Image 1 (cartoon, rainbow, N blue to C red):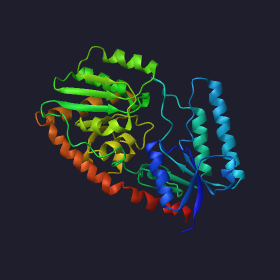
Image 2 (cartoon, rainbow, N blue to C red):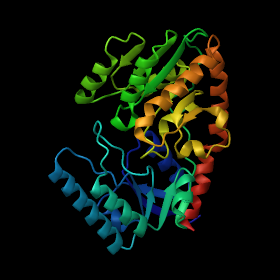
Image 3 (cartoon, rainbow, N blue to C red):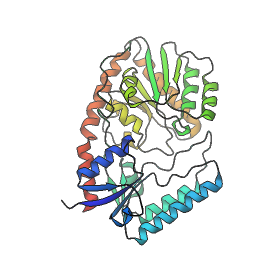
Image 4 (cartoon, one colour):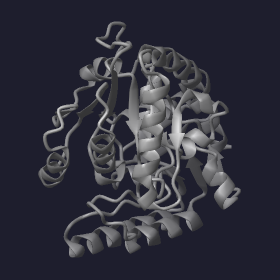
Length: 343
């Protein structure tokens, strides 16, 4: 097989998704390089991830970021590089509380990339159905099986109390605030919500005020080390993924949860539309944002009441999720799907 040289932006082998994709490209006989002036003259392909993301509190810095991205795109075109863009989200996630206005500069970058990209990688078939562009390539999102070590076998779970987990870097688009409000209003005696992940100081004050004195909500607002992830997931019945439907296609939190044998309560984003078995997870959707909390409450109530006194049976569902993600999202399938880029 002919070797292709590619630049991946950003190049970060410590990031879970990028690490797996870099390995997948290398398995396709690619020389994978970070962005640099010299490397631009060595490669044929530029692989862009989250390139459309532009975010800062300072509007002037936002504009400078926008100009830099425009210049970079122009250089790629002048140098006749093939641009491969991975469409991770419908639009960049919101990064501020209750701010839903679209970022005009990010939207412009996305429109340019839709136009000039030679190929667009998607990890869900939903965008292909929505946009109907021939340049789309469906590539299964690689799973994270054993990425952080083997799944934990032991846990402290019981049939009598359901433990729910919300974890990962805590950002507004993940809707932890709506989740906390839902848990507060449900006020179930045999339910615990565990929250784990790094959070900004401003957002922390907001979240703590929402939690108040609710003793059923346990928090650890520190960075989660890779070694802690298997144990963290093992000690919950279900993982919560109530992310914005407005921006999300492929929440990696769900794929990570499946990879470590736990099902999820989730908004029905593209990842779940692609699944041929809706019995593997507890999904919900909303038409308007004001409906989100009520729909989430209904979904949590369904699980709480239907599995009452037998919550550990949910672990069997986690095993089925593991089998699904192992069969449908293994790295070999990702590797094979990427080959059509270089034909």
